[in-house]
Length: 328
Ligand SMILES: [Zn+2]
Ligand SMILES: [Zn+2]
Image (cartoon, rainbow, N blue to C red; front, side, top):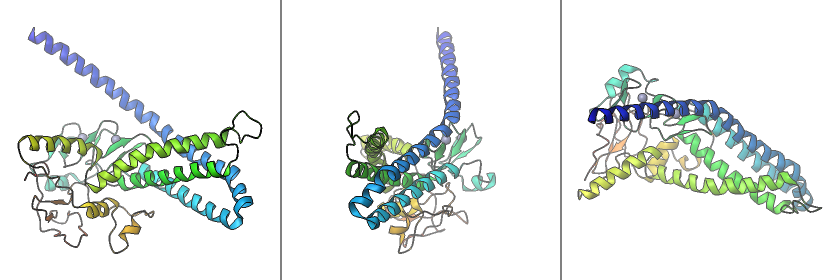
């Protein structure tokens, strides 16, 4: 009876695994179309802006105002396309891209082992079943980007959300303000289907992105990724049940988390994080800066150290903590 149950269980698991493999393969085929569709809808919105909005701004507020609106719309468009393209085309960083020896040198007792990649799995790295590789500091696999979002391209993802959020609000507002008869679809004198569609789409996208962007801003400020948030929540609950307090070792402080995520430093960091850049993010994604339970910043080992740019950083002199057992 026990053997029969185990056999049924094994068959069920292998069936589920083969189904999941098929789903992953389907996602891999479908996601490029979704990424192109996202760009297509943005361009359609731009077409609607130049067809219905600009001429009305000229007649109502003058050419100077129309020029300012056009510059602003083009700046938003540029940043949306720039960040989406870079998020899609930049590798998030995987363990298979790292030289095996470097990975072994950095490995500590707290690392897990990925049997699929046959390599050590650094803290905050996760195996993506769609990409079939371990992604460094993986946040999630994004079908709209047709890529995994991880250590090297997370900042492009958040900036894409930010510019899409601002752009969607702007689009909905100007369609509402400058298109007369926007909602009168069937009546004579109505604006037509396209501006109405773009208004509804922009307002809906803005609403959805308000939640998604807010979520990611909170994650950045608290030094977590989407997957890690779930792990951290269960560690926190376990610690609480045992009468202890769990501290996220990768939470360096809100400002330091922000600078580390967007890879900005210096006196203009508060402005630089929002500007487009092609520079590859500093650090390696498998040795990450963290704080010990006492609150002091731990560096990383040797030359593979993630450069710590905070004024309180103790680069190269610290140790790597377990990442999973920061209880106080
Ligand atoms: Zn793996
Ligand atoms: Zn992936």
